[in-house]
Length: 225
Length: 293
Ligand SMILES: Nc1ncnc2c1ncn2[C@@H]1O[C@H](COP(=O)(O)OP(=O)(O)OP(=O)(O)O)[C@@H](O)[C@H]1O
Ligand SMILES: [Mg+2]
Image 1 (tube, rainbow over the protein chains, first blue to last red):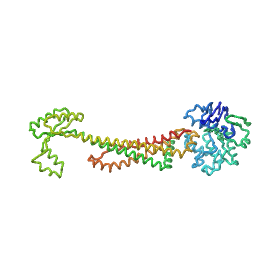
Image 2 (image 1 turned 45 degrees about the vertical axis):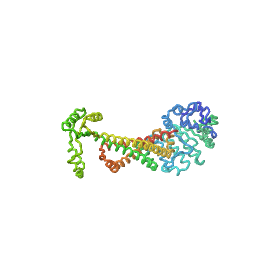
Image 3 (image 1 turned 180 degrees about the horizontal axis):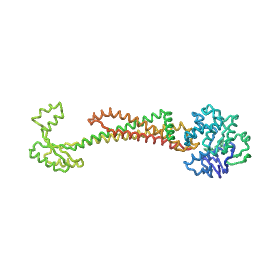
Image 4 (image 1 turned 135 degrees about the horizontal axis):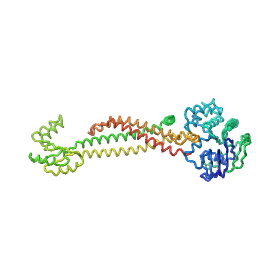
């Protein structure tokens, strides 16, 4: 569960990125976060990951109070979430399998468990046959699915995706979207930042939060719950 | 266990990836250790020589030629009465000459002309029970009439002591300076290694790796660099110590270099410890500031 309570974020240079955000996202929800460039969407995501701390207010993620966390706790907060970035952030000299395994190993997983779990997750995103391919040998959509597999491999309760389709050929965005939808149906909370209106319209049965100038301008509840 | 193997593997991979920098680090650290080792060995041997000289605990006094047999005996009694004197042996002019001849070996006939007209004085060879009151004993001896000269080894020991102090000082300072250089190079090697893997580190952080999980491979890398450097240095040191250093020592008329097997083991241990400490510190310097996200 995610909760923003009266959250302000003012960057060191004085930019007011968020001005009093109140938002509650329940378990199992799929939420689009949209808004113009510079509205504060990525800042919202950074607060969830403790990449930035709120200047005022509190962000609660899976029971962790982000503003009060110690350095040592941060990794454990992050393990409850899977992150997908616009630019995939795959390691070029590793295969798809190694990229996913890498995320599991980073949390101290055992080799046996890694060997069992990674092929399963790659299967989930439909890339069982591409395990040995390097990122450069994969399409943008496939690369993003690898990074989705990496986000899923540690079995997070929340997936946070910041413009996951931003760098993908429009024809391929839906393969990633279908994947996210499927993951959500299996019970994982999804927070997806996007400014792709066609996607939002097509999946309008999900909740849509619109940010404008650091404030929530609109919060349309989903229709399928 | 599996984790340690992973850290170790990552460290080896990284060393190999940046092998130029790794080699530079290893080389400089090895030189640094060799300097430390050489000064330790030389100091150790000089100490040995000093101890040996002091261990003889002997003072030679020479007597005025005017003394008759009774006078000689009198001086002997006075010497024996001094507190720290253990033994006091009379060395006649003739015995002194024979000893000199013996010391000359095959050149002994150089002194054959002096048999009749012996220029060497009579003397006493005094053994002391200890060296603590050495200078007081010398002072007391000076006061005894009939003694014209006191020969002591203390000045030799003093000189050696000075040499030893200088060698240790220079050795230690060179070690400190080179250790700092090593630290600098190692920390840069690790910094480079981290830079090369910046992307991986960043991703590791986002998937929830703890700081120490990220740090360990780099700490291992520093440790390995230190270990390799120390083993290399030990090998080279062993060679140096056997050949050129030994020659220098014998040229200086010092007894041959000795290092017992325990000392060799100690030296190895010292090298490994110093190497690993420098290596780990070097990597910690870089790792510490690189992990902010
Ligand atoms: N590290 C930073 N330091 C200072 N200002 C920042 C920083 N990051 C973002 N900002 C500013 O904060 C505001 C919100 O930025 P944010 O990245 O959250 O926008 P966004 O909604 O994600 O935009 P986009 O759609 O272009 O990605 C912007 O004005 C931006 O310039
Ligand atoms: Mg953004």
